[in-house]
Length: 562
Image (cartoon, rainbow, N blue to C red):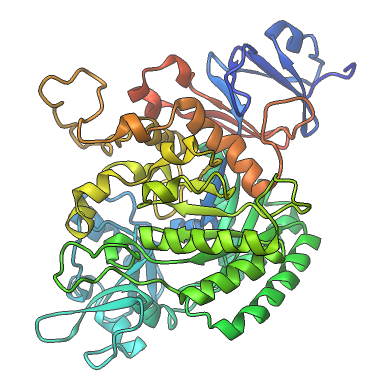
């Protein structure tokens, strides 16, 4: 190269997306990486207009790519009523009160409240704050709504409303709705909430982009494109952001398969998806993925399990969101049409049914990716992976199914113990078993369900425990444990990933899966980069969470500096 570089990052250590290298600097011209090497070699490319960034010993790496996020509505929530910062009941109620005071008359919506703080929320608590207008607040997991009496009234939900399939209207001792609605029951209210306008969704999307840049995320996969639980389809906002150039991050999205699909509706759905994929591609938006929730979540006892839940005596083990023959049909037909399946699955029965369907589709349409079968089979991926039987974990690699990891969830969750038992909880999220079986790994946050900070997720995946929230006292270590030791109840030795595996999953692994390019710090690659405040390979494992993003580069331009 003879022309000067536009940007040179020096005095760091390069993680190239797969391994930590000996290189300390990167040079960028336009939107491409033009050289990787030593500081002196990069500084030789300096011109009058070259921007020099001192990494101060921090790791220089491909930008994080979130392989499972709801960025548009995370941003909408941030701009409306965001309850995620609350660490107590009092703080949550104060945020609701403040939100009601600053918003106009009409629906008060938002979300992020904690089940640990509100295990059984009631409408009366909301009525005391907002008695005269409807309130609907999603939990942090966004599978539950907490509503007040006015919202129930407008939705026509009362003691005579039948319990919906795959959902639950919680009732009080008198038989009246409490205001706590799970899964499809939440949709009874969701369908009467005025959806966000396209302008509001676009504003939320751009707000989310700014926030994601601040944590080193340079691209992502929008996990639901379509109407969902009263929320408008965010596809138009993405298309507007791409057309205007305001949406500068690399993005893709998954077309939404709504629960309850009938067998005879599958061919029309596939045809509709093909048309949408082609139309969106012409506008520069890749939507060659189809998203389905095969089951629900353990917290609401809606995940589909092989063995019953622990806290009821009727043998209930949850339910699938589709009939098994429907799952087999849409997996086979979408696979044949070249769509990657992006499947939300939390229960071990859901995992088995989905793996069986993908195996049948591979047999019918052509063998797995890279097998020389004559077609480039889609890269299906399964997200969440809360409960996976050992034999099923070993099937991911041979079937070329990517494990789409939400790393933050892999810490022990005492809230689910009464539902699934400690043994199933501690055996969950078997990332190492899937990796050892040959599965490719990607990572995402599911934001706003959980925080989108990649370093926090990597910390949990490597350590298999979560640091306490700010202001929460760290419990004492068990007797005999050394500083930094893992709690002995966790199966960390067998299921923790190495730092290199976790870092690769959140960079090149996710980039390859959802953006279709390498996601590496190499000459010729797109210059989507981040610089951390330190080098995780030089830190003890328990200090990974201390890292932050110092600089973020998108398409060769610095978009964030701490």
